[in-house]
Image (cartoon, rainbow, N blue to C red; front, side, top):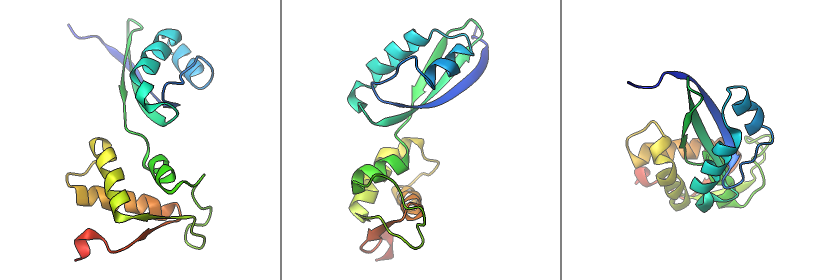
Length: 147
């Protein structure tokens, strides 16, 4: 018989750096989960993504056990890493803070593809380009589909 799901917890944690301090401790403690067990498992599974912000969805069961799924880093984080900027622009329509090439956009789209709700790399590239535009990042060159 399948376990009964009592809820979900969504967090964004730096890979390999989970500890019982907020936001993890209070979020898992309120559900009655073993916080240290989650931290150990999460850190072991995200050693290769050390320092990178990683979203995680924790499924909480009625017997106080849990499972978690690690997602790909947010598009904004991947864009800031690719452009080497600290943050997006406060007024992206006026002040541009960085620039990407379409090859970089394609790389980011391929990384994010499992978590996006699109079927082709072209549509994923359009989504990443939209996020970049909203951050004040310009994309140099001509889009591959405009040839």
